[in-house]
Image 1 (cartoon, rainbow, N blue to C red):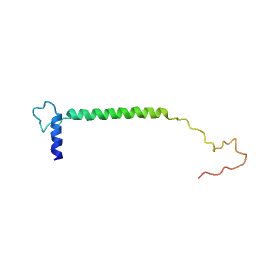
Image 2: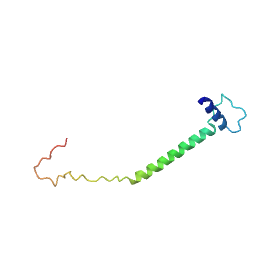
Image 3: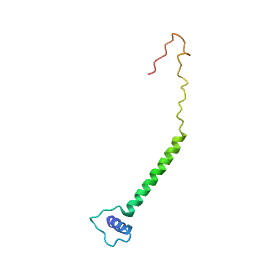
Image 4: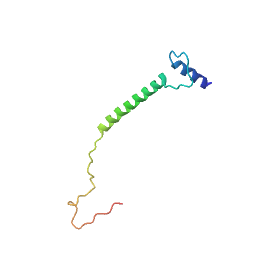
Amino acid sequence: MPDMTASLALTHLVPLAKELDKDKVTPGVLGFIVFAVMALAVWGLMKSMNRHMGKVDFKETPDPEAETPASSGAGEASPAKG
């Protein structure tokens, strides 16, 4: 039964079609609507991504535990990080 309603719905989406050729496949109005919705979704996602990427701070903060060679004592060996 669901197959029959889907077929009926698709025939109603083809406006002013007098004869439906089973050998000719066209996207029609439904294909355009689906493509337009997908294009709007991608546009919205790109706009959101650009807004979020604008908030990102790419400057790396220095590690407070990292010692510079000048500040470490002479002759002291730093422990190996594992």
